[in-house]
Every structure is written in structure tokens, then in C-alpha cells.
Image (tube, rainbow, N blue to C red):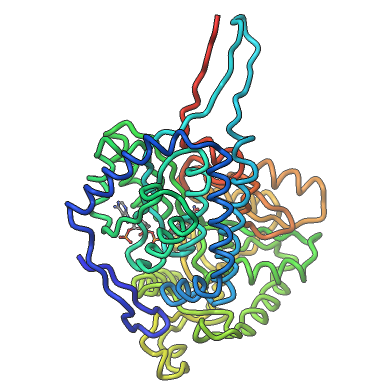
Length: 463
Ligand code: NAP
């Protein structure tokens, strides 16, 4: 199978790569295992030094890497450059704090001395998505490498140039060969890699179907997994909220990354007393987006990453409209595309869209809409908002807007999600754990919790 880089703004193929042969894949696995035996004995100080150099390589070339991200998956260039900067931040974060997070922890028992220590597991497979093609990889790799593991990346098949660039970044920063390798392989070969004895654990960020498939393969082998899957994140606004701030954040939270973020706000649950004002404000914000070539500095909304994502979104929006929902804005791909310049006609475009008055029984009840579509529901009170928020099978993030301390308390305690942000959109931060519950996955990345996922938490008892 060929792995291709295709510009999503134009549909033009940029570069095509051959998949790794079985022999080349075997070399990578052998190199990872051999390297781990040496790398695990390097000091925290040495690993922190390499991670700091990694951050410097990223920062020193952020324009170049940003252009690579935009060319392959279509997010606006400024956002792509920010992603490279954030990737540098996570490297520095674990360089600065990894040793402290992994220090021996003494525990008082009836032994003369007992403690917990954290040891690396070995080669870890990371199956990663295209939507944050740098950030997702670095937030796995920085803690994993700091802990003494070695990494193997199976990146999404539409971002091979990013995948190869990341492998080169670690090498240029001085990490020894084999500490971080990119495997250009399709999804169909992941189960075989997982079955290999040399792979000790795996992590996947992506869809539920892919997560279930990887977890099943790992389950057969009794191997640890971390899964970061989709979200249908609620964004709840109560009458006491600062409405202007809520509307502005709602637009950002939904349209970030051209609407293709797992923690994008997807369902807006707005108190009925303010829903009309919210809708008008949101419409105004979305109409002000500059849609176009994501390489152009002023563009704020680019294309979707692949034709399949456009097709899926069209089906979901059509199903909602068919059952009675109203498109307050957008919804019609063909007329939107017709207004774009000829050079962009071959791209994967979807208009900024607001759906309201969505009846029960549509895909909006339980599916993730992975694109620039805001689903707005009026709610009569906080009870109903929390009930609808918790009614989906996913539980990644949630955002609640209220100035009332009692409402804030209820939102933080009663929403079923891996993170609740009050009066802010949901965002990832190297200092805080990140992950979901229910079908959004399990395990955590980032923070102190993230570096403890791929280590042997060893108990030591000395009498
Ligand atoms: P996807 O199809 O699941 O792809 C993600 C990765 O999994 C790719 O590398 C893909 O490889 C691989 N893959 C697909 N099927 C697989 C299988 N059966 N076995 C093993 N690997 C498999 O995901 P997507 O739809 O492109 O990405 C968007 C999804 O990711 C959304 O649901 C989004 O919410 C989620 N996401 C979650 C987080 C989080 O932190 N929770 C962050 C970002 C994105 P190929 O490209 O070769 O198919």
C-alpha cells in the first residue's frame, strides 16, 4: 500500500511513499529492542538534555514544521506553528520534571526499608492521528523517552512527511539511533507489530473503532494500552455567565483545528433565557471567519483533512436536517465550494455551520461531528443541561459557563468527563493530566500521571 501526502486544500498529491517491507520492519523492531537495553541505563540528566535539545530543534524550525503540518492536514499556518511550539513545551516540561516524577517514593511499612520505583518497560508502539500530527506524538514521546522507554510511531497514513520529520528531529537532537523510529505502515499491520514480543505496550489516539481494535490485539497479548479516543464535548452556558466571553470562546472551541479536535466543543447546551442571544452572537463570529488557503496568514478556517471526513460530516448534517433540525448557518457544501477560488475547488471543504432545533433521535445525540458544525440545544435548567451532557457514550472534556459558585460546583462534580473547565474552553496542558472516560478511552497523558502510564511501578521491600 502506498502512503500519500495530499494537500487537503487543493487535492494535489505532494508525495507518495512505499510502506516499509516486512524485512525493514523487522530491522526497526530489532533496533528498538537492542537500543532499549542500552538506553534504559542512561541517566535522567542525559535524557533531559536530549529532550531540551529536541525542544530547541522544534523552536528553531517552527516555521518549516508548521508549513509541513499545514500542507499535509490543512490547519491554518499560525495554528500549526503554535502546535510546534507546544510540542517544544512538552519536551521541556518533562526534561524539567521527569526525574522528580520518577523519583523513588519511600513508604513506611514494617520492612526496614520499602519504596516504590518506576522503571521503563521497553519499546512502546504509538498509533497516532493526523489532527495534531506533531503535538499528539510529542506528548506521547516526551514522557515515554524521559522514563527510559524507546518509541515506535505508526502515524496516520495521510501525514507521512510529518512522521518522518519527527523521527529526524529526535535524531538531530542527539537521541541515539533506535530510540525513536517511524514505521511507515498501514493500519492493517498494527496487530502484527503488537503481537511481536519486543513491543511491550501501546497507545492509540484516534477513533473508537481503531482504539477497540488495538486494545483487542493488545488484550490477546496481555499488553498495557492507553486509549485517547473521540469526544462529543458539551459546552454549557447559564444565564449568570459572561455571555460575550462565552460566545467568543464557543466559536474558538468549535472551530479550532478546522473543527477537527477531540476536545472541540461539539454540543452547545444553552439556557433557554439566553439561547437566542447566544445563537446570534455565534453566527456573527462564524460569519467573520476567513475561509481559504491555510498557508495564507489571514486564513482562520481551512479545509478538512480528507474527503472521507467531509463525506461523514455531510451524512451526519443531512440526517439532522432530514429529521427537522434547522441550519441557522451553512450546511450546504456544494454552494459553499462554488464560491471558493478555482485553485481550491479540489479540496475538502465544509462551511461553518450552526444547527438548531435538533430533535431527539438524530446523530447529534451520540455521534462525534468532526468538523466545523456547532450543534445548539436550548435547555430549561442546569439539571437538564447536565442530563443531556452526560447522555452520550463519550466522556472526554466539558466546558461550563456560570458565575454562580453553586452551579460551578455542580458542573465540576456532576459532569461525566475526563476534564471540566469552568468559564474557559477545554484545552490540553503539559502540566495537567489529559484523557477520557466511557468510550473516550482510558489512561492519561501529560502531567505526572502521564509519565506513570508506561513504567513498571515496582514495589521494593527490604528486611
Ligand atoms: P483513526 O482513523 O482511528 O486513525 C487514527 C490512527 O489509528 C491512524 O494512525 C490510523 O492509521 C490508525 N488506525 C485506524 N484503524 C486502525 C486499526 N483498526 N488498528 C490499528 N490502527 C488503526 O482516527 P481519525 O478518524 O483519523 O482521527 C480522528 C479521531 O481521533 C477522532 O475521533 C478524534 O476525536 C480522535 N482524537 C482523540 C484525541 C484524544 O486525545 N482523545 C486526540 C486527537 C484525536 P491509518 O491512518 O493508516 O488508517
